[in-house]
Amino acid sequence: MRQMPFTRKSVLSACLPFIFFYLLLQGCSQPNDTGEATHFDRVPRVLELQGALSTTPTGKRLILVTWKYDTQNSNIRSWDLTRSLRDTAAAAYVPLEIILKPSSGFPSYRDSSASIQNDAIVGDSLDVYYRIIPNGNDNFVGRPSNVLHIVIRK
Image (cartoon, rainbow, N blue to C red; front, side):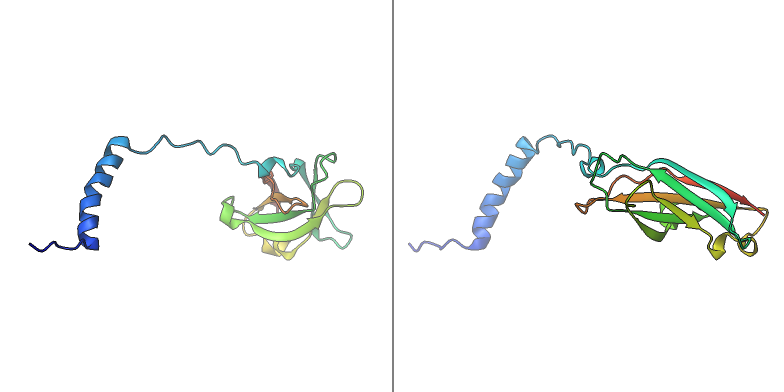
């Protein structure tokens, strides 16, 4: 009598039920907790985010945004300053500028752009939202700041 050679299909057909029953009975282990992201703690957080509304010497509106950070943590290169008008959705924030770490003191940003002037305000007021994202020297991105809300009255 002639013996039939094993084919891939026959080997696969014989192994699949064993694999299926093994996985059915043993199953997967319990999922592991992913834990907290460690890169958020590597870069100093934005502290005391504040804004003040004023005017420039030429009479244009000016928003001064200031913040502090832990100066003992040297892992800071810059901050990404983002702004949103009338909308607090994360996708609405537009990058304005990269603020480099100052040689002394704390960082700030002066906003007197056309979008916050009188002719850009529809209605009786304009809501302006700022958010700052710190960037470390080691290329890690820190935790975004709280949202700073400024109301500009017409």
